[in-house]
Structures are given as C-alpha cells and as structure tokens.
Length: 324
Ligand code: NAP
Image (cartoon, rainbow, N blue to C red; front, side):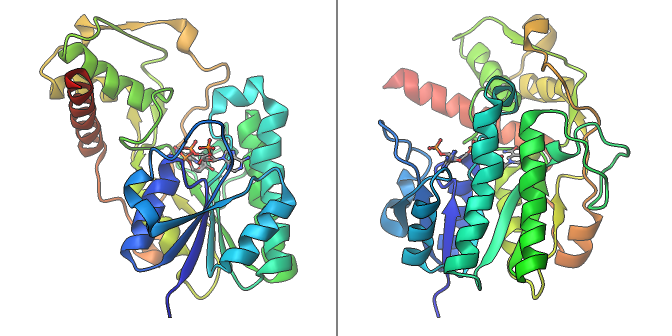
C-alpha cells in the first residue's frame, strides 16, 4: 500500500529535499504550508503536483488537526520552525511560539487525530549550547545558550514525553548545521560560497565575515533527510545525533571556496566584529557512532565536496541571473 507522509516546513531547505526523497520512494506526500502574501514555493516548484499542499500554521492548533485528519499520514516530519539563531534574540517570544509551543500543538494534534503516525521532530545541536564534552552524544546534557536552543530543548523533551506517556512513535533527530544550494544567504556557509562566486565573476570586491576561527560540524542537507527517513523506518522510536562527525573552521570553508574559483582568499576577505554572533556556541561536534552502528547511516558528502558543490551552484546561478 502507498505510504503517506506529512511534512511541515515543506517550503524550507530540508522540507524540499525530504519531499524529493519521499516522492522518489513512492510516498504520497503532503506538505503543511502557512499562508503568505507572496509565494514561498520556490524550493518545491519543480515537484509540481507530486506534493499536495495543505494550508496550516504551527500557531494554530485547529489547522494542524484538520491537516492531519485530511492527510491521514503514516509518517509526520516536523521541520517547521523559526530556524535562525540571531533572530531568536530579537524575537524570543515568537521563536518560542513557533519552535517550542508549535511542537506541543502538533504532538497534541497527533495524539488526538492520528496516534499511530510515526513522528520525527527536528531537534538541533543548539540544545547543547556550551556543552560539557565534545563530541556530543545522545547522552550529553543540554545547556542551550540562546532562545532558539531553549525552544528546541523544550520541543525535544515534549516529543520524548509524548512517546513515554502516550506510547507514540515519536523521535528526535539532533541535527548539526547542514547546508545546500537551497540554504538562505543569511547563513555563513552560503554567504561565503556566494561571496567567492560573486568576486570571481567581478560582481563584488570583498567579503566581510565574523570570527574566522569559529568551528562547526557541517553536513549536506540531502544526507540529513535520508537519516530522518531511516529513523522512521524502525520498529522502535529512538533519538539520534545526525552530524558529519568532523569539525571545520570558517577559515577552512573560505579557503576551499576561494581555491575552487582560483583566487587567494586573503586578498578579498576582511574580518568585521559586527558579524560576530552575540553568544557564539563553541565546539559543537556530533558523535555519529550510534546512528552509524544502528541505522548504518553516515554522510556521503565530505566538507570539501559540499563547499565545491555550492560554489559551483552559485557560479551557475549568478551567471544565469546576469544573462537573463
Ligand atoms: P528553514 O529553511 O528555515 O525552513 C523553515 C520552515 O518552517 C519553512 O518552510 C517555514 O515556512 C516554516 N515555518 C516557519 N514558521 C512556521 C509556522 N508558524 N507554521 C508553519 N510553518 C512554519 O529551515 P531548515 O534549514 O529547512 O531546517 C529544518 C528544521 O531543522 C528546522 O526546524 C530547523 O530549526 C532545524 N535545524 C536546521 C539546521 C540547519 O542547519 N539547517 C540545523 C539544526 C536544526 P515559510 O516558507 O512560510 O517561512
């Protein structure tokens, strides 16, 4: 029988890759999309009518219940959230509404309308904040350091509580930063790959960045959505860290991006303290031992592969744009 999946956050980076993956696996795919005054379907337009769009909002419980009842999904992936850490400092209450309470509303809607659906919650490495150990494992204590991390920690524990209290198949994937050509340019990875491509094409002269020594665990979003899917194909719900298992610095990223376009990064990159995060989390690196051992998952793309793929994409996009 055809499996049905509901994705929240369909219009976002991960939602679009997950929809592609599920369509390719023969799923009937539904996506919850909130109303906006202008179209936000750019990342999923190529999927056409292979994905059915249902109108709803994490802020509105009745819309969630309607969408779940109408789609009657076997699997629900909650990827929707206010996902930008710096904005969580300027809009902390809204971040909590979307990213924390939105998950309560969704879990309660599942419990009432489709308790046999399997549920994936997009947790984040930001729950670890300033961790006690590195790499972090599924047992590392949560010490979130920004309103986004606090909201994700609440959502994480609510998911586990609904699993324990109501026997739902509900689990959390703790993902570390993941990128793709569909990532917004407000995120540093895309800012750098776009910046290198613009300078190469003569569209810009310099790139201003924050802390070049900041280190991150970066993955490709396409690898990450594969892990989400695997997590819902098991007999029993379990939480997993989804990461690259490697740490690289912003400087490594800059170097690979400029090397790829044949330029010396030191001639173009300057450091501007205005781009430092107010409260930068350090040494966030995930151990993928559990997911590798139990689900046989590990990322297919290396950090260098990912940088090159994104610079290549940005060169093409910018060239096409200036030709049109
Ligand atoms: P994203 O590109 O920012 O997408 C967020 C999605 O959430 C968008 O589709 C957005 O819809 C939707 N959304 C926001 N508020 C909503 C609301 N009130 N009701 C319904 N939908 C709403 O995020 P992403 O990079 O794909 O990340 C997916 C998930 O993983 C998020 O939960 C994020 O916090 C988490 N995560 C991401 C990373 C990462 O590095 N990408 C790392 C750790 C965790 P609109 O199009 O209408 O704005």
